[in-house]
Length: 497
Image (cartoon, rainbow, N blue to C red; front, side, top):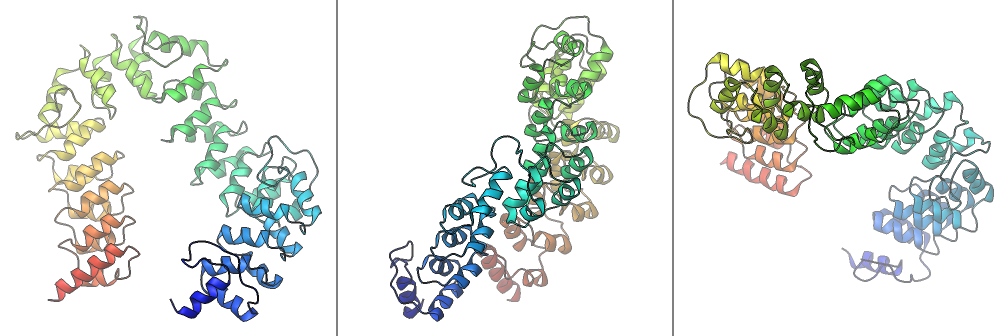
């Protein structure tokens, strides 16, 4: 760094090692302050705290992407009132609080935020529902925080609330999702691909429709299902399903509800569950085969109960023995009615006898036996995806299996057709893509896609893959990861020799 630049930074208030602040020297010119601003975020922070920075320059710095810089602007003695109003609506609570403390902040601005439901220091929304009338049009112009407060206010007009449901900031959309006046249709539109915080609020909202709550029950995130379990608007049918959920935290919420149907609780207890739905108890023989089959289809807890009940039919136990849940598999294979022929097939396909792991098997399996595995549960499909007798057509069908562990085994199999491999480079599971990039037989087009993978480790492996071309490497010469850039340079040099 030029010595002149270092001297400027020190005069502006930087320590000699540029790691902190010290008192600034007086007398920086307007031109020197502009130079500071041009030196990047550290320079802009120094300008934002420099006592002589003019008000018009502070206005520009208030729009910085860095919250630390904006907070320094909010603390600056020369910060104008209009800029402080802008910073009172900042997304960062530290910036808002600094602006609210400033002696030059317009009192009417702070009063508007408080009337809209903010805490006194603007650190965040207050607990409870605001009851004051608010000019929502004006409030929505006051930054992310203003729109957030407007979005959660119960008196806001439906049209404005609908507009805020499409806000680019997730905090505003999450506030819409907790507004007590939000319509069911509006809440349904917020589920989609929105952030967890928005979807969690939709799951807990009493006006969410049964259709919306049903979609959230299918989510893998246990926190969302737990919110649905505690929602007062959740239907008896959904509660019945959640009472058999594989997560004990979800079942605990259902069991504590006074409106959980007593008939459903009695059936689950008869199937072998404790009253609080947290542990096993002795099952009773009065449960029918049809009821046990229904329990096995409704959730992880239902599967475990069915797998250990003495009246569960063999067909259901066969399905449970190929479950993706190792506890369910273990309970099912111990059951006296579990089909022995299926267990023998699973072991012949490479499963350990306890169905908990893999063992190498050198024997071939018939196409019919492999097809049985392909059409069974996740454990059976994983075995099929690993077995040397599995055909290219069967592997192609398994390449888009809903179980990522099945797809990972397909990605490693020597018989997987090229067309299926080309499609799997877009797989959402990183371990599937990792298996792909570490195998032979990939096309140069597939490797070119993996060179742009989101994971640096996958990109590194793609750089050294035998199918990588010089053209593909040229396209990633300026990769953001320094290790990838270095590997690209080495590989290009090797290809040119």
